[in-house]
Image (cartoon, rainbow, N blue to C red; front, side):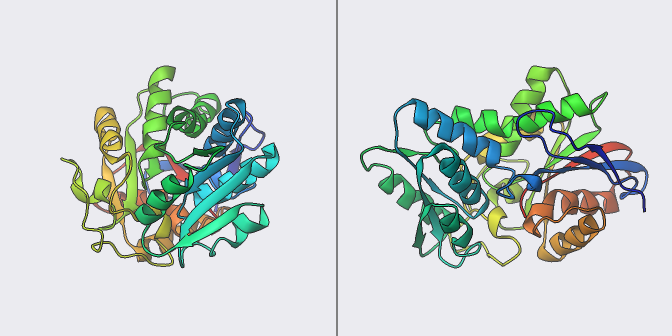
Length: 303
């Protein structure tokens, strides 16, 4: 097995390695953008740092967010580094129960129900004096997009030409929108393929549209798919438009496919969670039915 790290040194303030996994999919060259290498283990760290910087500049003392786990870990660490107080609202039983976030200094509120219930509670808590809603669709959404778009610039600097496709995890759809905007600004035309939990995210179930939310009790959360499950993807419609504009597709992956992709990634020195492996799971599923060529980049999202 041939594995080569193409880019280990940061290409920007938040650089993460780009690993050449060779013909992990026959006929293609698969590059792994290991966004789990941030200190928080989450690809959301640049977005969290951008939100905290904006909040500090505007005089706020506390950032309040909802999370499935990834954004909460990133925001807890970004807030601590900046001396900002942080409140994270997490559905009961999800992630590690908030242990990582508490250890990083965040106040963790557990709420029964879904991620969407956590969002509602976070918005209520954010009305406290001195606090700001730091959710991905909140008043600092432009900072969120700027942070998530960092990866597009990293790939632009590391690669001599656009890849044949870019595979991105789908939860709320935020990363897809941000990357699409930055690729367009860079003049790169790259098909974006979004991958989410099969049957458990409206971006997946509605593709290619129109967008419709799922019944709140119609999604199934497991230990493996948690960060990918939404009955309402907060930025789903725009994410679907972004994928369509690039000529890409949206795919689903089930838990067995997540675990298989996770096991393959370990062989190449990457250690994401099962959910963090979803982009590769989608590529592998698509490759079973479609002959692929060229260079395909998969983004890993959390460990």
